[in-house]
Length: 218
Length: 238
Image (cartoon, rainbow over all chains, first blue to last red; front, side, top):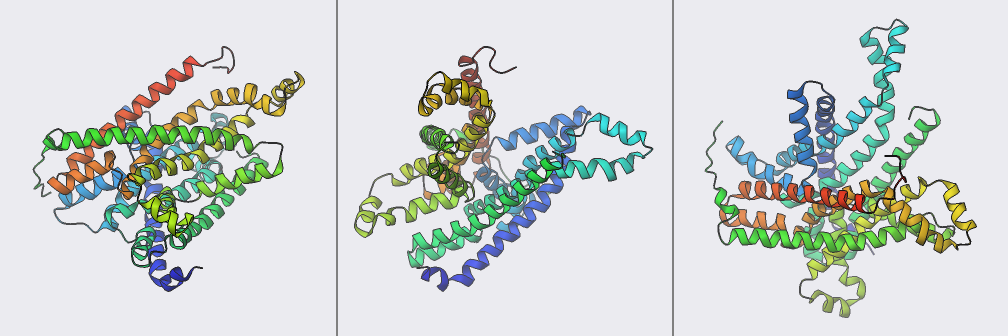
């Protein structure tokens, strides 16, 4: 039933590896930049708040595919030479996903009540101790389900690197399909692999959400 | 920085490119709206089944949302477009493949099914936020279960979930750009096509970005208008 898949398994799995690398880079960069974006969104300094807000609202209103194209076109101009599609794709994913992670971090920061901070100070903790032992652990536990969910979305989004010819999982599958013409099993296989990973991920997210609710953190 | 690039913003209105963009916008709007109609009706239906008092429909509806949410839309689109016709067997499949504009119909269908799973999730959350007394009050007036959902709970839930539905409505126009991968000549496709003819993809995609932005702002206004129009006084404390 999956004969065409098995014949081309090394090639397909090579593509899946690229998808994983892409996801890893996009998450590392997107979360790091997202922390800064989240801080910018709660900043009281207008010259920080307004540009960051503009960036977030602009990017969130345009399709990811267009962002990928845009960086694909703009990178050679900025760098003065052709860029490998992988680099170009990673940069577009970081810029795009950081706006989504940024909003999660903003919500996380804002979920910490003033009373909690005052209570921590009242016990004699310093500011950095309060952050280290109280604020960060609580905010992290509250944000964890959303962070996992957004990571799954990022994993799915990397398939769009297809459009600039990057040989990730879906691109390689369609290359194989052009030769084998076994669309049902080939695209069924890709769908199954994505489903398994994303479904398990969503279960993990739900587990942490329920745990948070049980322990009263969320 | 070696900035050796001559900007040519004329590609946004010079012929034939200006017409291409307009055609692209028109197709983006059509795909988005038609997909949205499918998504809305199917989403309400599936979302309602998810809280239905019958075990099997509930399981099927849950499976539907899990499957459609956990597979990238691009993969779903490719599956429906390349594998879909084959599901009907050799003979019928070949006939389906000859339909003119198949990619256009498939993209509407795929977008509708995908977005329906997201609408269904919001519907479920909407139902969950309605107090249990409301259900019991409806039943105690003598309505059947189906009537209760049709006349009381669904109209109620729909109003509650207008804000998340606005986001989904915005998302459907953004996701419609993925239809370019099966050759549907919508806005993103056209901006890429301009690049392949003029090598001024940067200007074309920048223009397209602002068009999507404008479209998004229009949708937000439209949904704000709908929310105000169908508001029940005193229903929600805001």
